[in-house]
Length: 397
Image 1 (tube, helix red, strand yellow):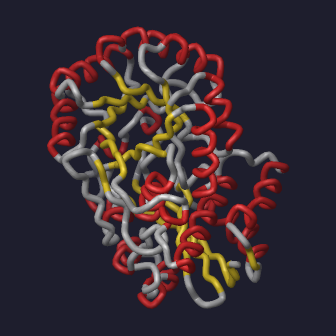
Image 2 (tube, rainbow, N blue to C red; image 1 turned 60 degrees about the vertical axis):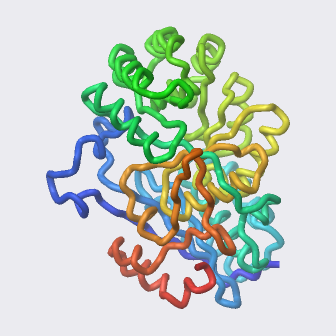
């Protein structure tokens, strides 16, 4: 039994201006994809979750932070934390089931409420693993073993030759697969796809991510133009709830269609499978955390689809996803995101790709992605610095 003393949540924000200065942030960071054109991406954000048991052992979780980490924090502080403080729980699933039903009854099957549950679930699994003295992957039935990864993103660059050069740079780092952001019009997309495909070795894999950029007619025109380019998958060509168009695209596309980055609960992923999606792409910090990944593993075993985890977030989300891939049979691929994120990279978690396109999950008990005091200092949030005293991290590191 886990005996919960407290749960706390903290907003984490790292603006790109802290690195580049005002007015000097590169355009490809402010507008890296189709959904960041008018509403630009100004930095990295997440919600940190800290669950402490009665012995003072801490588990760390993370909630997806876009467009703002504030709603997740408020839901955890005002709803989840008061109800769980002092509780004795047998498992993370058992602890959060009542909250899940509560949020669904209020119409919150998407967004911050589900993300809040994901962050708390991750923290509880981290705590449970530490108490058991095991890595998270072993708690899930696997072992700490190399995980197959692909590089992302080749962002919105102006010149197709620049996109090809970026793709080759990923391959030079040891990756065997990579993802291009598309969604700037079919002609522009194809120009960049062609340039990359012509520059890459024939056995290297190329994925495409439209980030929901297209309406039906343009999406259909896009899939009609993809046949010559040996695409591994086309990800989120249209809005996630445009179900009829998704079905049409799955039936018509010469390559597999992926989706699920913006879905949260099992029934939503089951619906994607029914529509013809063959690559489910969940985010562990959105889709009910580690417990959610266990449900998707079971779904994949029943249906034969592939599960390729989305790769954004801090060290906590990345480490958790890698351990889920190592521990669960059908979670076979992870997206190694390369957008600048000190909250992911400056935490002492070595994530180095080998020459076969694999990364080893962090070692140690739990998920191994606990934030370090140095990272807290870079975030410049006194509340997080107070929460993450060095003594608090000794169990995690």
